[in-house]
Image (cartoon, rainbow, N blue to C red; front, top):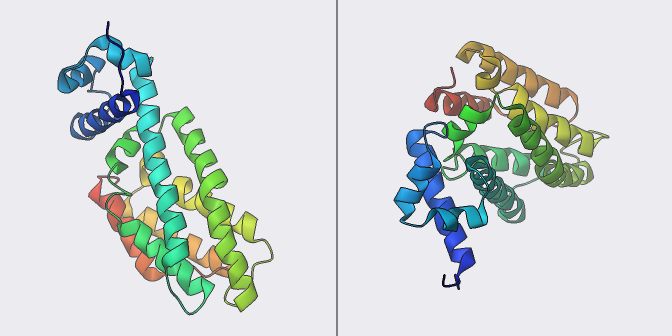
Length: 215
Protein backbone atom coordinates (compact mmCIF):
# COMPACT_ATOMS: atom_id res chain seq x y z
CA UNK A 1 0.00 0.00 0.00
CA UNK A 2 1.30 3.45 -0.89
CA UNK A 3 2.31 5.51 2.08
CA UNK A 4 0.29 8.65 2.74
CA UNK A 5 2.57 11.60 2.05
CA UNK A 6 0.18 14.06 3.67
CA UNK A 7 -1.01 12.60 7.00
CA UNK A 8 -1.81 16.03 8.48
CA UNK A 9 -4.02 16.85 5.51
CA UNK A 10 -5.83 13.53 5.91
CA UNK A 11 -6.31 14.19 9.61
CA UNK A 12 -7.81 17.61 8.88
CA UNK A 13 -10.18 16.08 6.32
CA UNK A 14 -11.37 13.49 8.82
CA UNK A 15 -11.99 16.13 11.46
CA UNK A 16 -13.70 18.50 9.04
CA UNK A 17 -16.09 15.85 7.73
CA UNK A 18 -16.73 14.42 11.18
CA UNK A 19 -17.53 17.87 12.55
CA UNK A 20 -19.98 18.45 9.68
CA UNK A 21 -21.75 15.12 10.26
CA UNK A 22 -21.84 15.51 14.04
CA UNK A 23 -23.52 18.90 13.58
CA UNK A 24 -26.00 17.67 10.96
CA UNK A 25 -26.93 14.25 12.37
CA UNK A 26 -25.77 14.42 15.97
CA UNK A 27 -22.94 12.42 17.47
CA UNK A 28 -25.01 9.38 18.44
CA UNK A 29 -26.61 9.07 15.00
CA UNK A 30 -23.34 9.41 13.12
CA UNK A 31 -21.48 6.15 12.53
CA UNK A 32 -17.89 5.52 11.54
CA UNK A 33 -19.28 4.18 8.27
CA UNK A 34 -21.04 7.51 7.67
CA UNK A 35 -17.71 9.28 8.09
CA UNK A 36 -15.93 6.82 5.79
CA UNK A 37 -18.59 7.18 3.11
CA UNK A 38 -18.53 10.97 3.24
CA UNK A 39 -14.73 11.04 3.05
CA UNK A 40 -14.40 8.44 0.32
CA UNK A 41 -11.46 6.93 2.22
CA UNK A 42 -10.73 3.42 3.35
CA UNK A 43 -11.54 2.27 6.86
CA UNK A 44 -7.82 1.80 7.40
CA UNK A 45 -7.17 5.49 6.69
CA UNK A 46 -9.56 6.42 9.50
CA UNK A 47 -8.26 3.90 12.00
CA UNK A 48 -4.69 4.93 11.28
CA UNK A 49 -5.50 8.21 13.05
CA UNK A 50 -8.35 7.26 15.41
CA UNK A 51 -9.23 4.12 17.33
CA UNK A 52 -12.92 4.93 17.70
CA UNK A 53 -15.68 7.45 17.06
CA UNK A 54 -15.17 8.72 20.59
CA UNK A 55 -11.54 9.50 19.76
CA UNK A 56 -12.74 11.51 16.77
CA UNK A 57 -15.18 13.42 18.98
CA UNK A 58 -12.39 14.19 21.43
CA UNK A 59 -10.24 15.57 18.62
CA UNK A 60 -13.14 17.66 17.31
CA UNK A 61 -13.70 19.04 20.80
CA UNK A 62 -9.98 19.77 21.18
CA UNK A 63 -10.16 21.85 18.00
CA UNK A 64 -13.11 23.79 19.37
CA UNK A 65 -11.49 24.35 22.76
CA UNK A 66 -8.28 25.44 21.02
CA UNK A 67 -10.17 27.97 18.89
CA UNK A 68 -11.92 29.38 21.97
CA UNK A 69 -8.61 29.71 23.84
CA UNK A 70 -6.92 31.41 20.89
CA UNK A 71 -9.86 33.78 20.45
CA UNK A 72 -9.75 34.75 24.13
CA UNK A 73 -6.02 35.39 23.91
CA UNK A 74 -6.50 37.49 20.76
CA UNK A 75 -9.28 39.55 22.36
CA UNK A 76 -7.15 40.21 25.43
CA UNK A 77 -4.40 41.52 23.19
CA UNK A 78 -6.59 43.66 20.93
CA UNK A 79 -9.72 44.91 22.74
CA UNK A 80 -9.45 48.58 23.68
CA UNK A 81 -11.13 49.95 26.81
CA UNK A 82 -10.71 52.67 29.41
CA UNK A 83 -9.90 50.12 32.12
CA UNK A 84 -9.52 46.38 32.68
CA UNK A 85 -13.07 45.86 33.99
CA UNK A 86 -14.55 47.43 30.87
CA UNK A 87 -12.12 45.42 28.73
CA UNK A 88 -13.19 42.14 30.33
CA UNK A 89 -16.86 43.03 29.94
CA UNK A 90 -16.33 43.72 26.23
CA UNK A 91 -14.42 40.46 25.81
CA UNK A 92 -17.20 38.41 27.42
CA UNK A 93 -19.84 40.11 25.28
CA UNK A 94 -17.84 39.32 22.15
CA UNK A 95 -17.31 35.66 23.07
CA UNK A 96 -21.01 35.07 23.65
CA UNK A 97 -21.99 36.31 20.16
CA UNK A 98 -19.05 34.89 18.17
CA UNK A 99 -20.64 32.39 15.73
CA UNK A 100 -17.60 30.12 15.38
CA UNK A 101 -17.13 29.93 19.13
CA UNK A 102 -20.67 28.53 19.40
CA UNK A 103 -20.85 26.53 16.18
CA UNK A 104 -20.54 23.32 18.23
CA UNK A 105 -23.01 24.23 20.96
CA UNK A 106 -25.65 21.69 19.96
CA UNK A 107 -23.05 18.95 19.83
CA UNK A 108 -21.69 20.04 23.20
CA UNK A 109 -25.21 19.94 24.62
CA UNK A 110 -25.57 16.32 23.50
CA UNK A 111 -22.46 15.41 25.49
CA UNK A 112 -23.01 17.59 28.55
CA UNK A 113 -24.29 14.68 30.67
CA UNK A 114 -21.25 12.58 29.85
CA UNK A 115 -19.17 12.73 33.09
CA UNK A 116 -15.85 12.46 31.24
CA UNK A 117 -16.83 15.30 28.96
CA UNK A 118 -17.89 17.52 31.88
CA UNK A 119 -14.65 16.88 33.77
CA UNK A 120 -12.67 17.61 30.61
CA UNK A 121 -14.56 20.88 30.15
CA UNK A 122 -13.90 21.86 33.76
CA UNK A 123 -10.17 21.21 33.43
CA UNK A 124 -9.95 23.06 30.12
CA UNK A 125 -11.71 26.10 31.55
CA UNK A 126 -9.62 26.22 34.73
CA UNK A 127 -6.29 25.37 33.10
CA UNK A 128 -6.55 27.43 29.90
CA UNK A 129 -9.25 30.12 30.11
CA UNK A 130 -9.14 31.16 33.76
CA UNK A 131 -5.45 32.21 33.76
CA UNK A 132 -6.10 34.63 30.88
CA UNK A 133 -9.10 36.14 32.63
CA UNK A 134 -7.11 36.33 35.87
CA UNK A 135 -4.40 38.30 34.09
CA UNK A 136 -6.94 40.95 33.06
CA UNK A 137 -8.25 41.04 36.62
CA UNK A 138 -4.70 41.67 37.85
CA UNK A 139 -4.52 44.59 35.43
CA UNK A 140 -7.80 45.76 36.92
CA UNK A 141 -6.32 45.72 40.39
CA UNK A 142 -3.56 47.96 39.12
CA UNK A 143 -5.93 50.49 37.50
CA UNK A 144 -8.50 50.28 40.32
CA UNK A 145 -11.41 48.97 38.23
CA UNK A 146 -11.30 45.50 39.86
CA UNK A 147 -10.72 45.08 43.58
CA UNK A 148 -10.64 41.35 44.30
CA UNK A 149 -7.68 40.16 46.34
CA UNK A 150 -7.92 36.75 44.68
CA UNK A 151 -7.88 37.28 40.88
CA UNK A 152 -6.84 33.72 40.07
CA UNK A 153 -9.46 32.11 42.29
CA UNK A 154 -12.08 34.63 41.19
CA UNK A 155 -11.42 33.86 37.52
CA UNK A 156 -11.59 30.11 38.14
CA UNK A 157 -14.89 30.22 40.02
CA UNK A 158 -16.35 32.47 37.32
CA UNK A 159 -15.38 29.99 34.59
CA UNK A 160 -16.71 27.02 36.55
CA UNK A 161 -20.06 28.68 37.24
CA UNK A 162 -20.66 30.17 33.80
CA UNK A 163 -19.58 27.04 31.90
CA UNK A 164 -21.08 24.33 34.12
CA UNK A 165 -23.44 25.52 36.84
CA UNK A 166 -25.31 27.98 34.61
CA UNK A 167 -25.87 25.39 31.86
CA UNK A 168 -29.62 24.61 31.75
CA UNK A 169 -29.09 21.46 29.69
CA UNK A 170 -27.00 19.81 32.40
CA UNK A 171 -29.40 20.68 35.23
CA UNK A 172 -32.68 20.68 33.22
CA UNK A 173 -33.60 24.25 34.12
CA UNK A 174 -35.99 26.55 32.31
CA UNK A 175 -35.28 30.06 31.00
CA UNK A 176 -36.30 31.94 34.15
CA UNK A 177 -34.30 29.64 36.43
CA UNK A 178 -31.25 30.12 34.21
CA UNK A 179 -31.64 33.90 34.24
CA UNK A 180 -31.94 33.85 38.05
CA UNK A 181 -28.63 32.02 38.28
CA UNK A 182 -27.02 34.47 35.89
CA UNK A 183 -28.26 37.33 38.05
CA UNK A 184 -26.85 35.59 41.12
CA UNK A 185 -23.52 35.22 39.28
CA UNK A 186 -23.65 38.94 38.46
CA UNK A 187 -24.26 39.86 42.10
CA UNK A 188 -21.64 37.42 43.37
CA UNK A 189 -18.91 38.68 41.02
CA UNK A 190 -19.72 42.26 41.97
CA UNK A 191 -19.44 41.33 45.64
CA UNK A 192 -16.06 39.73 44.98
CA UNK A 193 -14.80 42.96 43.47
CA UNK A 194 -15.05 41.92 39.81
CA UNK A 195 -18.18 43.56 38.38
CA UNK A 196 -17.87 41.96 34.92
CA UNK A 197 -21.31 40.42 34.32
CA UNK A 198 -23.44 43.01 32.55
CA UNK A 199 -27.20 42.91 32.06
CA UNK A 200 -26.50 42.61 28.32
CA UNK A 201 -24.32 39.56 28.92
CA UNK A 202 -27.10 37.89 30.91
CA UNK A 203 -29.55 38.46 28.05
CA UNK A 204 -27.10 37.15 25.45
CA UNK A 205 -26.25 33.99 27.39
CA UNK A 206 -29.92 33.24 28.05
CA UNK A 207 -30.70 33.78 24.37
CA UNK A 208 -27.83 31.54 23.27
CA UNK A 209 -29.20 28.65 25.31
CA UNK A 210 -32.63 29.27 23.85
CA UNK A 211 -31.19 29.11 20.31
CA UNK A 212 -29.79 25.63 20.89
CA UNK A 213 -32.94 24.30 22.57
CA UNK A 214 -31.46 24.35 26.04
CA UNK A 215 -34.78 24.91 27.82
